[in-house]
Image (cartoon, rainbow, N blue to C red; front, side):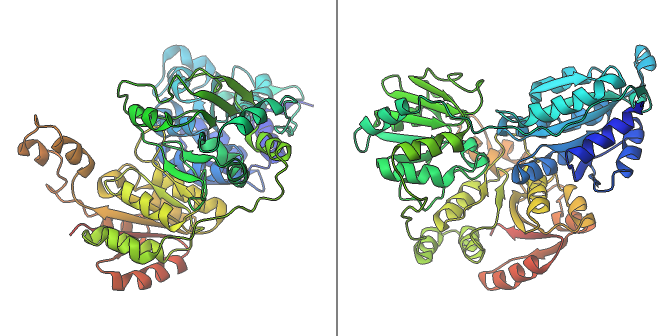
Length: 530
């Protein structure tokens, strides 16, 4: 029995139980859309711009732990999406991205919006391929899904010419593959011997995003507790990797290589769980000192011994590997001692000199600690993260690992879509401009999400950096103002469908939060620098 490319797509979506297709389509995707309409349990999730498409899908995939399916429009739509594709790529988030290409017979004439799609995508994905015929489609879709989810996970890209959806092919096979990630190396005792022989106080674990992605946080806690080891969160770890109230937790590593180097000199053995110690500034020294024993555990072979020479590199799913270590150490149960959450009076005292920061303390103290918090990279990021971790928030998604702005707002929407609970996204007024249009999708699909926007009408982060360099003048600062003309972020958010609110004092926090959490849609709250 012959099938069209559209038939293959419908069978793939049904077999793999794909509930959402995130997209911003165009003419080359019309047949794709027709096929989606015929899938009973699949919803086409419409966005206004492709970068936000990817960000929302990434948030959804992060929670569901399955590849999210994305539909982009030709070369230009792909170009718009590359920034957040790169953020997802560096964060290990599985995505299957499909872009429409012009019909094959017409490509010789380089029609409008055509181009080398796979070449453009390759810098931000694990794998890229252009489908050449309908007979390739079943293999390409299943290969793309598999490559997206296999260690280390990440975005995969397929370019599909629009005429393939109507082309017929012989009967093809679509099977939902069950991947077994939990196979353990029988030589696990080697690492256990090293860990147990390291003197007390001389062992440290570094937790990268793979710890949270593999559901290994509590396992890490129990092992560190048994071995009297310190735990550090890797910089730019994207998602939760540790309970901040763990007695073994010593904080997040700096993104400056020299500072990490000097800190780790105190240890005899350091174990990296995941990909790397992601840095931002190189200050003349490698993050990992030469003299220490360095061990890395990761499910992805391409991560092992890639950035740093290893004494021992272990290929294996983190949850399964840490479970095996736990059993070898005869650890029973997952309960570990936790520090009490910080006394709110101590936090208030710490930030009392800064009205806005004091307001953030009051606000976060009234939020349930299980709520997902997302930060973008605003001038208040460090303060929000410090307060959140000190209060014991369990799900804090930090600034984009790839460094591209326009990530946090759509990521929060995707997280809320998957959890069906409110998440809170902190963003600056300048940074919000990269993705404020994503609010429209949250309003359209009634997704409960709260955006808290710091309004300072300037690129304050850059001004702070510039103030440390004497070569800059006051005139340079004015070039970073957002006052001429002023941007009314509330009116923009309102026009995209959010309910808008402002918090000017601590007395207003409870009322505004209660209203925001009761609203089944996007809320946009502004906090002004005083």
